[in-house]
Length: 202
Image (tube, rainbow, N blue to C red):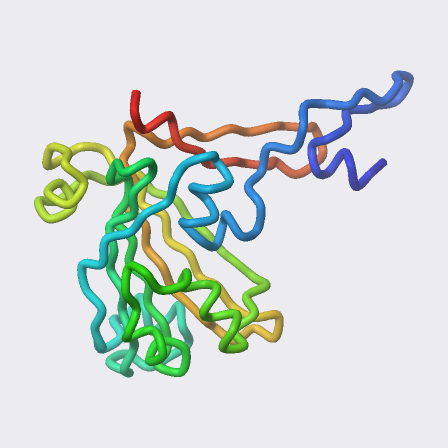
């Protein structure tokens, strides 16, 4: 019962019977890690347009996230992600060369990035995400078909294996007019949060 309460599935307290709440609203682990899984879990058709795949030098932020030295080589993939053919986010994925080099040949028809990582032996078990509100710069506005300065949700993600080996640092710039945020609060327990998309066609 304590576990169910912590997961937001059951409400109970001293002197009252337990009550089943609405179904769990938090995203699955795969949907937290992968934009493709996030879209598909929400019932949308996922798509991607590759903007750039390149070897880069790690910035201070990237180096810190991937436990590298600044200017160490990394592989960066930048894509526009679509839901039901509507551009909804700019995605930037950065990997240590160990995991990134095999992804240099990625095409729109390749298996998903995270499926390829699993096949390479990168089993991600830990994710840390942070969300900020920002505004679209000129490049993001053009890629997403929105006005410069329009609100974006800036999500950052650090993913690592169970042993703590960093696998990925990602940044997502999601259109503020399509994102939804749902929470289920239970006093004394965790606060599950689910990110979703409004119907992109509306």
